[in-house]
Length: 76
Image (tube, rainbow, N blue to C red; front, side, top):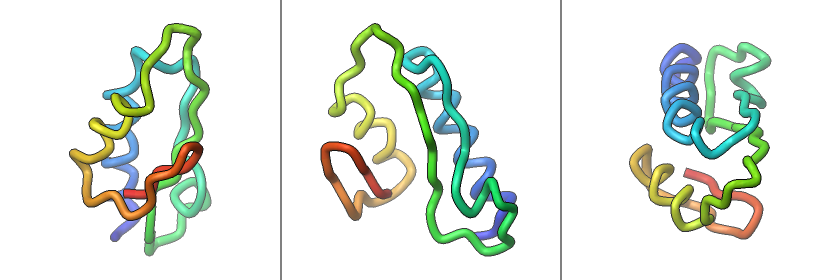
């Protein structure tokens, strides 16, 4: 995927989960401005208000097929 498209998607995801996080930013190859991006890495700090992992997964599934579904890492 091209860098600009990946940035757009990453920012859309961050905006959707913004009510549930204290901080969030795009990381990985996007942050390093690589022209070809294979995945979108987001680093987030959740608010103390609880949002279940299931709720986060529902949001992420809007952006593609889940290829890794773990307790600490979800890859779409």
